[in-house]
Amino acid sequence: MGEAADEAEARLMIAREQGRASVTFSERSGRYRWTVVLDGGKTSHGWAETEAEGWWFVKEAVNRPYRGTHHRKPRGLWTLPPT
Image (cartoon, rainbow, N blue to C red; front, side):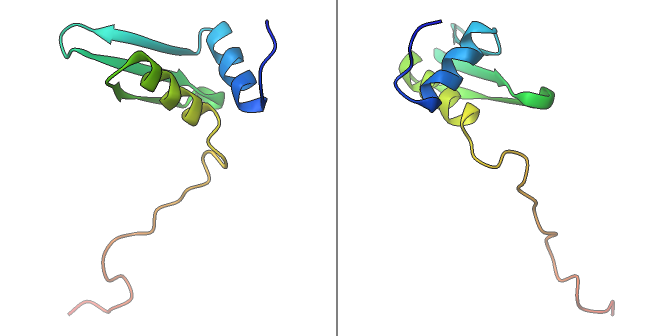
């Protein structure tokens, strides 16, 4: 494996080498589909207009800080008693 400019580029290169990241062209939609398999089997995927943009999304997904720590709060008025 070659030299990377920074840690984010190194992580992207490792994911590419291991086959956990890909950007492929979909003729049906005319756009690029990007997919990443992260640690623990979680996947991230989406669409991009260009191949370079697809790899940018892959890089963001691989280097997302605090992966898996986001918790959504319940929606609605849960503190009010039922009427």
